[in-house]
Length: 408
Image 1 (cartoon, one colour):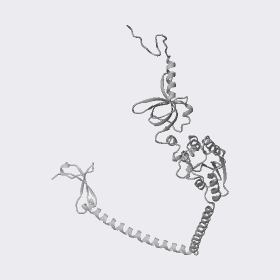
Image 2 (cartoon, helix red, strand yellow):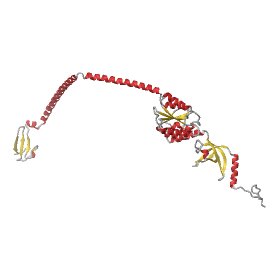
Image 3 (cartoon, rainbow, N blue to C red):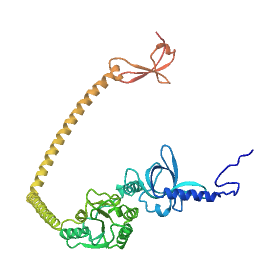
Image 4 (cartoon, one colour):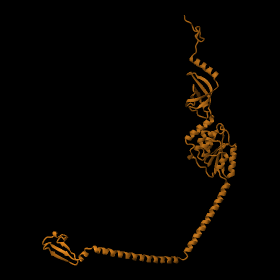
């Protein structure tokens, strides 16, 4: 006998059931009613940013994981870029994507774990811009020594502007200052600062730019950490001095600018020298130059007097030179005679040695030389002669023609 199951949604009297869509909707409503606002800590993996601006990723710990999504309207307000491996705190609601039955965390707010979102965004942008060469020292330009016109991009209501104007007026009163008023914090501030940098540089009315503001928190100074401001500084046609906050504050603008000033007041000191100091330096240089000219003239006068003294009696110098020529001539003649005597003595000695070796000297001692005719060969051996051969005999004095009649 078959026992019938007693199930609430599937009884014999009325077989009730849920469609998949109804089931998923029920699960979705249940989840959202129980987990509408939750904070979740996890590590990002499989992060994907779609062209639509929506971000899809997985949050995981060492035991479990859950799919997550952050829609574009929430993602655009993030000051940093989520990355795989980053530990984050996410606030949102847990729900079911009914179409596929996927459980998801719908993220409304995301914060990096262990460090502030703004600090992380700062480090990410700094690293990216450095890799692109925006901070390279070799591209930084020198600040003009004495600019005629100075551009200032800052808030027209801030104390920073008043301090800069006062400093410029005190140091060099006749310099022209062109002010481009902007918001320095809050929504739209970065765009206004970038526009001011671009337009003032493009106008051709200024020789150098100062951008900055007074001190504040990282959030207050954030407009000077925006990429749009960094790009505008990099593309500026005139040198830029960044003067944001206090000496301990550093912004992205400081790294891109041609010079960083610790404060707005210090930027004004950088851009113009003290007029009184310049006048004093010029006065000292003028005095030094005059002393140098007087010294040069005195030396030239002394040289002139010395030359005049040398030229008072040109005949004396001529006579001295004539005497010197006579002395040199005598020395040359004496030297020539000595060399000639040496050559004669050497010639006589060589002649004596030649006479001793001469065959004529041998003949003087009673010897003679026999030449066989007609070849004129000198006869050294009697066996070379035959009876009747003709000979020419050379004596010390004269010659004789003979015929061989016999040999011994």
